[in-house]
Image (cartoon, rainbow, N blue to C red; front, side, top):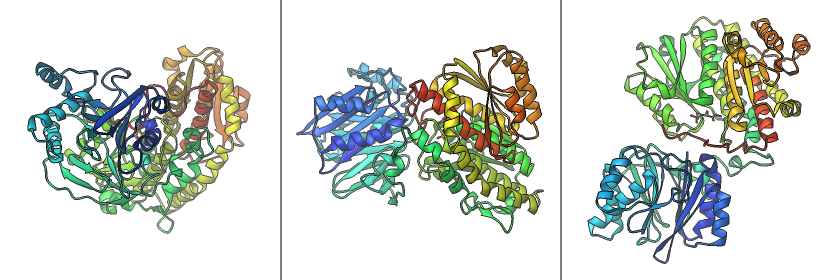
Length: 616
Ligand code: F6R
């Protein structure tokens, strides 16, 4: 949520900053801004809208300089206006700051500063922080780089909340200072140049050598080098990591949207989630990253799965898988609720937090609360360098590759794959026989080929989607393993097409939802040929009896009853019930995508959203 890019070196800063911002645009796209240092002055340009709007505005009114900071915003405090866009300045106008996160006590600090005569231009919490740093620096009476860093330390001690920040000051050309608490920052090491960004994808085109800052650390960057210290003023150890991600991984390639590219990447991402993790001989899964012995896993009496949005829906599929395959009582809890509930948790409760980005504020808070209560807490993350990955006691990486489209796609299927492996492992040290284990392994190995067949249905699904694109309301129905898929299908559709879509367990229809059914309200039933197929069929009959159009997702070779009853049928390869969510969700991703494209929506950057929700 929001993106930061900073550059200091020998090249013109603006093109590097704008390219970096473009790569981070999925993090926030309300407004954007740049500040550079030029001939002892700070020059700032800000624009409402997208990075291209800012680029155009800079094209008309260029700004030079080889040091600069920049920001793309997802508004939290203050409306989307040019004044509220970052960078923000201190009282002197000689210090500029960009910020991700939320300064929670900004209101009282602002009142105090106003009483001292400070005037504010914006409604943001960020401007308060800029004034605090500037005030401390001016009060110090010293005009040195060291004094500026000390002023930052002093200011950071006054604020509560979260921040990833970058600062430049007119008196120090060739210097950027960054600091982090709860909002990621990564330093990129170049030759005679250095970079600072909230996400490595912004700088990977320039350098692969990076240092991930920890919370409570300050980085001071010049073109020649950098230092890292703690907010308390002590030296900090750091590791230089070589990033594997390439520039290509974070570009759309020949696809018209990142979302479409990522849907099509699912043969690979699901294969990668399983790679090296299927132990044929023992007919189980091998998940060394859990850091738990079989005896420890055997003593787990209860599993809690926590996440937000799509990750929560994947967790719900995991709940069915773990209970079905391993018979371990499992519960899903919204990460945003976790720490506000007094969830009864016996000492043998194992907690998993699921997060693609590994930076979602609510999920991180759930992880910390679970650990504080003394529970072993494991992560299922995609981003290996993320805070959740680093703070969890162990876990399983998804290995899905960067997910840039704001709507989560491949991360859902990777999470479900990982949860199925966990269910297999937990099952095999309990009651699941070796022959059942082997059957599950062979089904999982056959999954990528089935995904490939679903991907080939894109044009068929697209033509169905186009016929329903004008609907104002849509209902998604599924049972058992596919109830969470109904929720996920509805979420996908509403977030990128703005059609009011809701998901339900099919039988819930008669308990109220059926009141919404009419000729204009399509219902999408996920009805594979499983144990509850005929139950789903009865629910479809109920909708048809009331004139509602029905699109059904069924099973190849077994679609006859659905075809007789439904308006449209999408048939997917046969799979065991615990794997049908992966195939069905991909069909629904295509469905949502093609409706949104038909409606002319901005698929990769839906209104009001941003990737990675790093505020509570
Ligand atoms: C929906 C979507 C969100 C995320 C949620 C959690 O398409 O992308 O619902 O799934 O914000 O994000 P992560 O997995 O990064 O914690």
